[in-house]
Image (cartoon, rainbow, N blue to C red; front, side, top):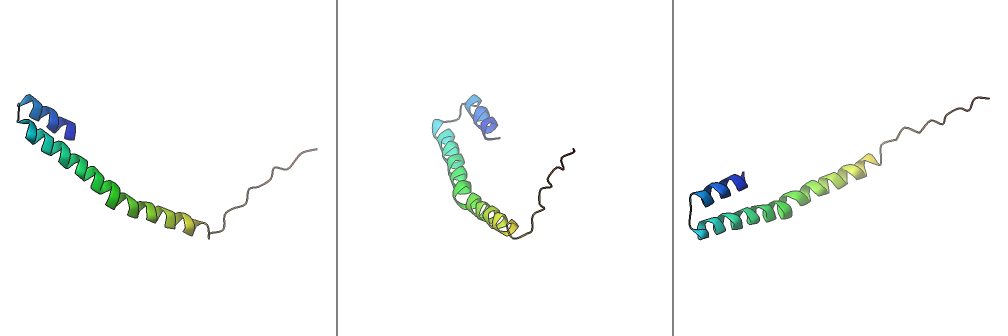
Length: 67
């Protein structure tokens, strides 16, 4: 989506500062998502992994050797 907007604006010959502001806004949005959206999901994933440890896991069955 971002690349399409950028290409359309370059083809339309918009001033460079508009393109620069768009690139800066995109980088800021990515930074925001990385710093504020990803950590809670990562923490939730860690909690879920810790919670899974308390559930009994099925034991692996050993194969019987035939004689």
